Length: 220
Image (cartoon, rainbow, N blue to C red; front, side, top):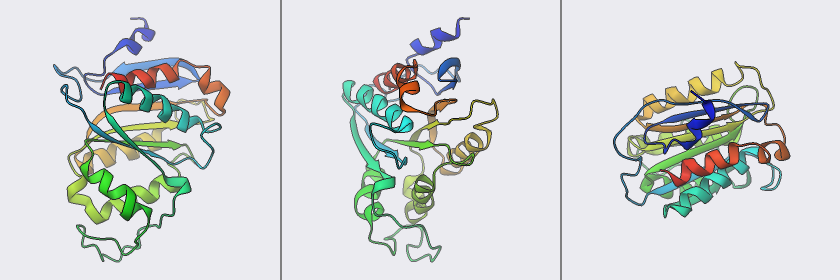
C-alpha cells in the first residue's frame, strides 16, 4: 500500500505518523472503529505547548497550530496553554492536594490550566525532543497531574513531538513514556505524531506534516 494514502485516514481510531528528514517516511492506522473520535459531538480540547521558542520559530508549535486550525474548522472548542511562557511550578511531592484538591502552588497551572483540563474531552501534549525526552516544561505539567489524578483519568489524548534527530530510535524512549502515561491515566490514545529530522521551522513548514496534523484535528 502507498504509505501516503494513510494521510487520508479520518482517524476513526488512533493513528501514528512518523517523518524522516521532514519528509513523509511512514504512517500507520493502528485500529479501526465504527465511529469518529468525537462521535459527532463537539469536543473541548486542551492543547499544551511546551517549546520555549516563539510561535514563528517553533517546529512543535507549528504542528499544534495546524492541528488547532483543523479542530476549530470542525467546530471543536480549543484552549491553548503555553507552558514555557507561563508561571508554573514543579510538583513538590508534599501531598497538600491529597491527589484531589488544590495544589500548594496558586500558579497558572492551578488557576488557568487545571480547570480547563478537568472539563476537557481531549488533551493534546506537544513538545520538542530534549535529550530524548519531553521538555522540562511539559514534564512539569505532567507531574502536576497528581493533584487531580483521578479526575484526569479516562480522557482522550494525542501526543506530538519534533526532533532534529532522524535515527529510527530517536523517539523510542519518549514514545514509551507517553504510552505508559496513557496506560496509567486510562486515557484513550487517539493519535501520535513523531516528526523526525524536523529541526527548523522552514523544514517542517515545507513538509506534508502540516496538512497531516490539520487533518487529524479536522477529522476528530
